Image (cartoon, rainbow, N blue to C red; front, side, top):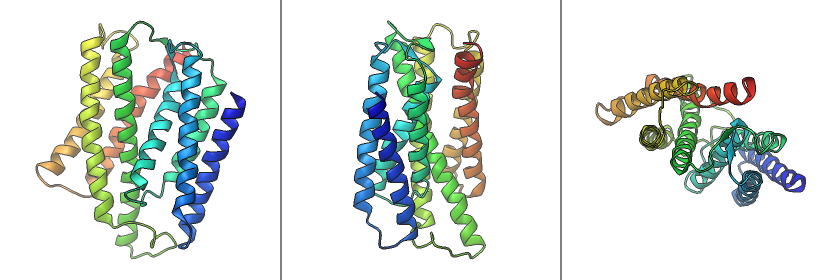
Length: 262
């Protein structure tokens, strides 16, 4: 397991370094960094699978949830980069994924909430993780939108300007991701009410309330843009606030339950 972890870390960090060099050199090749990232994500997925399989997939904790989200983020950004190389925060995703692998291996596989013999709970968790990963990717696009708007507003040109995509392209991807993630988040919340006995039970209430509040904020962003064609800094910032609320609801509750109370 340590050999697999070392290889995964090496590939993630190498990919991040290649991307940073690519950002500072217009002549840098995209193919090498992409294939290194593919290998890193593949090994990350195998490492995550091995860790969960060591406990027969009976437990899920804050470490395995974090690593799952990091894996999905890296995977989604990898798919997106084949269509648009404009996500300048991809190196940050790969460093985050590398750190999540270390945290994963450092945590015991049988730690956390039991999900054995509960197929409905597994469906709810998978939907929640995928929705969260998509929305966090949208948040990274939101950060890039704010950065691009700042450059344009202040008429600033730097080394990254030639690499950055047009503002409208980033904005279009941002709203697509927000729309898809919001729909999936509502489906995940609905699956919780269907498959779980009480979504407002002790230890679950704050997670449900915060997740529902985040979903409502995301829905405001989607409807404001889709129906009333609202655009601009306000909606982008609102989506970032929703992401913070969702993170507090999901990982905050798991941290308290698994670490502080565990």
